[in-house]
Length: 153
Length: 138
Image (cartoon, rainbow over all chains, first blue to last red; front, side):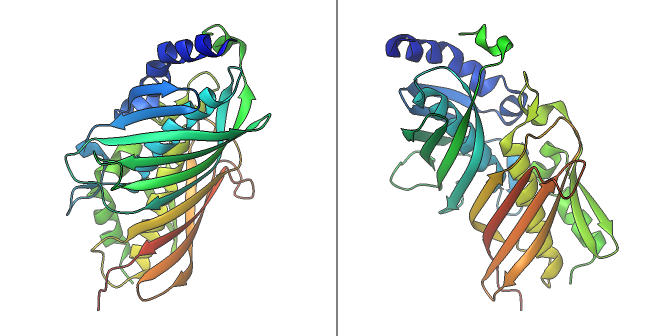
């Protein structure tokens, strides 16, 4: 598939990939942008994701999920051909607590792909990229397309 | 050591645990966190497979609860410094379990390892290693 057509298709499918997976929908993850090897998603503050009721700070797992989802789309956008991608490893540093009430933004970059493996870095912040909430390093595996998914392309 | 009833109360106060539908299970002194299957924890509906984030959320919660069990007070909650999750097998749409072991408990930092499985404990679907910052409680 030509590169421009592929990115165009990702813009069409991005919202579905981000927001319409049952767990993405449950958390309220939103698609923001996609480009070759790059993806941005957001997670508006949601009281249902609080991990510490005393501080009202979101649970680390919610931030992990957002980073995983953004990395997944960046991995798909990093390969030359459309393929589903599965997480192999996700390593996350939590630099500070997310501010209660603030939307979290995750920006993922796929900096290298081999035939089947994508290598990614991602940052999660609440407005200022230079003051990250968390940073991730991840590897994903291209698992091909099921006939049902292939139709979407 | 914090009693089981206090742990149950503490878990019930955490909205994210309810969002994932987590249920604690005590067998003697051994603690297992259960994530009964619900459709809202699915990440890929065509396979179908659980979301990596819901599996990680289960394991991160299991680590925090295990640290609470082993510390002297149920609050404040330990804070994550960093985690590393390996996804080993597909998460099928069925009940998932996680059990945490504290590898090292320092005065400020604890190292925890967590395993998540479905049908067979010896066939884990994911494994996690994490560092947590402990609050001084005594």
